[in-house]
Length: 180
Image (tube, rainbow, N blue to C red; front, side, top):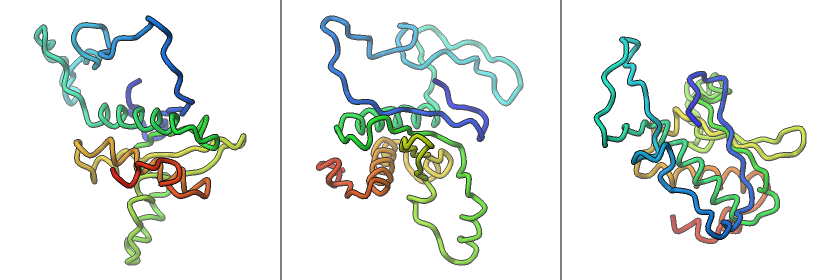
């Protein structure tokens, strides 16, 4: 699944309970086409100036920041789905380029009331059927977090927002959360 180019079409990831793999049916961890990498081949069109030459054989395409964020979100959703909390089963995590309420956040900044990173990085709500929906904001997260800390930051953000929405402490949902 590739990141969307439009800020108005967010990606969705859904948390499900962790299932044990079937005997003998393991999938390759590399993914992709099996040619030495999990990143699909890219056309390498730079700034609309046309195609560049293809990568040499044996070289993998460089992972973009969006690829790393997508992987971090998938890991966080899988980990939260494995916590076994009934209120989090079926939870949806969306990735959106910028916050919907950016104008309100800018007004708060100009008034001298800086919002915390939890409001800049994610928002939480529910769908009509009661499904918990956490929306991560790509630009604020990627601009504030180093790539080596991205997995931890995304998981901590999603867990904290979920815990806040269901009225529980994050340490109750994941006892190892404080040791991140």
